[in-house]
Image 1: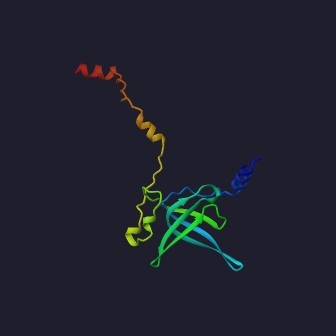
Image 2: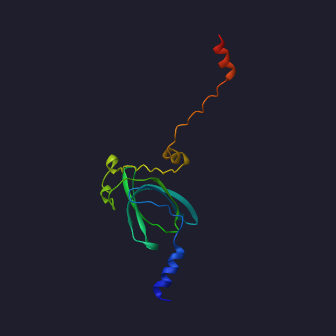
Length: 154
């Protein structure tokens, strides 16, 4: 077995499976485990993804946020054991792979348009609309001989 193959197998065991799909421009809430002395706590950081780099075990993403008038950028390894959970808050509508232009902006300039995601539903109702319905023909009314004979007598 080659050396590269052994490394790939070890890395494959360390990859996380619980990572949601996200792209550049999305707003994420990252729950990070912070160790202070002998205590451990979880802190949530919310921000916009401005870059995704690498692949495999060394894949990272950069999170940009503005809090209390100060801009902050933090790089997280996606498969890090320090990350407790990643939540996608909003999907952004962007046409670039890196959003470095957001670094010096504040307020409305630093916002990314939200992409509204809809799920396509295939329901039986949609299938019924496609089928043409023929108009129902009414059955002919039976002639009542008793009433016909009475009407003709007078």
